[in-house]
Image 1 (cartoon, rainbow, N blue to C red):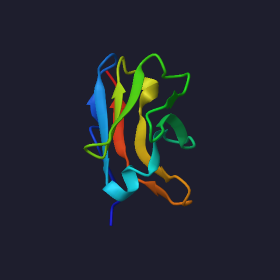
Image 2: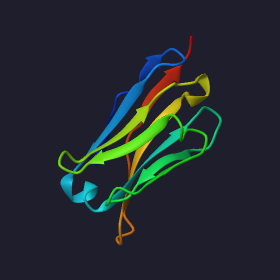
Image 3: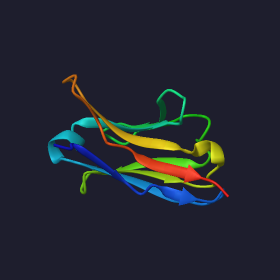
Image 4: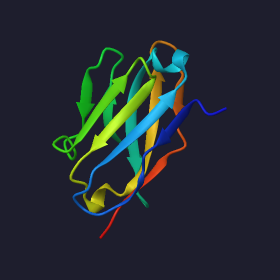
Length: 117
C-alpha cells in the first residue's frame, strides 16, 4: 500500500517552473513533519526542504531563493514550488513523512524532474 504519492515531475527547459505534489493518508499527513528530498544519479539522497505540522519551513541554501515548500492540511497534500529550474536540479524527487513521536518514517515512490535544453 502506497502511503505517499508524488506527482508533477517532468522534462522542462532551464528557467522553467514546476510544482510537485504529494498526497498522503489523513492519519499520516496530519501527524507528520513533511519533507522533499532528491537524488541525482550517482549522488546520495539529499534534503531539499522540510515543513513542520504547524508550517515552519526549512529550505536548503542551494535552492532557497527558488523553491518553496508548503502544505495544505485540508487536502493532506504537500507541495514543492520550483522556479527558475537549473540543469543541476535534475533528480528524482521524493516525498517523506516523519510521524512525530512514533518513529514511523514513510517515503513516496519518487517523481523524476529533468531540466535540460
